[in-house]
Length: 301
Image (cartoon, rainbow, N blue to C red):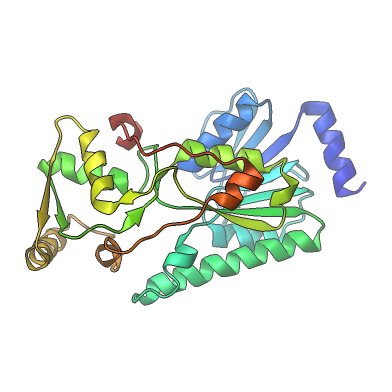
């Protein structure tokens, strides 16, 4: 039985079936909820043991030690590390006509970064996308790559939720003057909707899409709006560059900024803006404006 025939038989028996990698992550969790609400039967990968429920079976494991996976499904979604997924998919024997994988606009923004680690990340993302598209083409499947901008909405991102947490602890958040580079923060629910919509959109086969948020605003205004969602509202303090560098060095020395990318401060003055016209045309993509709430920025229990 060929891949399309087998998948059609499975769908006819039980409704459409999805395999979701990174199902417990911030995008994956929103996508799993959407798929179940649409009547899909979902099998989702997670590192930690979770209780399955109607329409959802959790599979515990990771790419280094994968559990037994289904032999066929209607769609595979990757919401975790793109490079690891691409290596698995290139060698996988699963029968599936549709693959939708999340990457990142960092593939473009960090391609010429000063930091070697950031350039290497951009190269890995580009290589992973090529690997997925080639593997899908070789087996007669259709792949779509989705590249979000700055993600928020589930309290689990490493950007706006981190800013909110730092500001809430100290009551103040520091920025260098001139942090006016444009940003397009995107909500996780809009990303989940885009992935779900892509399944039945033939125009998206073999293509990649930038997925920015529905509003473009300066970095400084994005931070101010984030702080305004908190109660009590932390103070935003903008410092001249020399004073900000001193404050940043002190924060690093105190261990309060572990994991901050080397180029992050410099990029506050750079425009990181992407066109959503293709995604709007092919996916019906219509993301919301940036209106964060405290619940969107708080870490989940």
